[in-house]
Image (tube, rainbow, N blue to C red; front, side, top):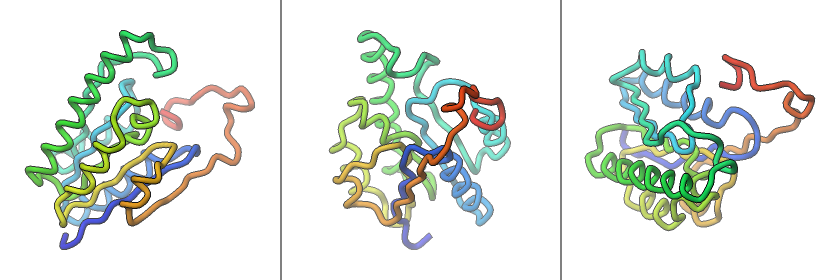
Length: 176
């Protein structure tokens, strides 16, 4: 790829990770390599099994041990999570330095910023130093202005109606 841009899938709707994965699958169909680093995701999801079959062209990395949702964690668990996020960010910077993929997906990185687990400036620095030919995709609910100023694509996925509001629990194969 001659020119890699920066994409964001944000908003409170379902499908941000799915959209990023779809972009990655499209890219490997064109002979590209994809690395996805997942933040704030440690439980099993169905797409992991499928993506495993796409290795070595599409690799997924998680640095967090399994735990509850962020808002249910105590202070010690949040500190431990923050250290795991630091390891993930160090790896993301290494990927940029080595240029070992064509597309780098930072899944739920915006949530890590929102929860003060990674500094927005650190993510901005990463974006400012990405190789010219590498595409970077970020996902998460809230897009900050500093990141917004650096990106080329912004897609907002809005939740208009969701079954959880009617008491329907998350369903295997659909929500996870």
